[in-house]
Image: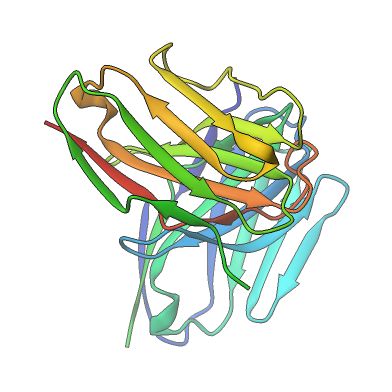
Amino acid sequence: KQEVTQIPAALSVPEGENLVLNCSFTDSAIYNLQWFRQDPGKGLTSLLLIQSSQREQTSGRLNASLDKSSGRSTLYIAASQPGDSATYLCAVSGGNQFYFGTGTSLTVIP
Amino acid sequence: GAGVSQSPSNKVTEKGKDVELRCDPISGHTALYWYRQSLGQGLEFLIYFQGNSAPDKSGLPSDRFSAERTGGSVSTLTIQRTQQEDSAVYLCASSLDGGAGTDTQYFGPGTRLTVL
């Protein structure tokens, strides 16, 4: 069974810093990997989706990379802002199954 | 346009009662997903509908859980004889096509279920 791990579980940084969130998965046979953010009491918002054939995706200050062979993905956030504070989740799909990590809780301090 | 909507937003029920949770996907989206998020735990995949195909039910935690999707649109997740461990936030998502998760999923706000 696929297992998805996110490190660190929590992260606190001062505003303006660049940061990296990590996601690892045990089975490299995936269709895609998605990064989401979840704000307290709300649903998930999709940030980036990387297909299995792709290496990275970029959207604004966000850049996500995927290395299937090593079972890893990183989400890079540039010039962090207080509004980036949220829980970030990665999810992998494969074989009509979807597996989420437990998330990284990010706090950006003004 | 309108996003994914779920109802009710909150549901409190007594142990042993049945509950129905509703999900309205984004219009035109053929794929629909149900997840469960328990306190302090990650999201747990429950079931996935793709168009008119039979759903993959392998993620449902027990036979007390069932889901249907009528007319390829609205979906209902039913939990029979609820137990306290069923307490969680139930999230629904939809995507344009699906195809084993090839498209971006858009999530609803969730239904918070509390079983007393």
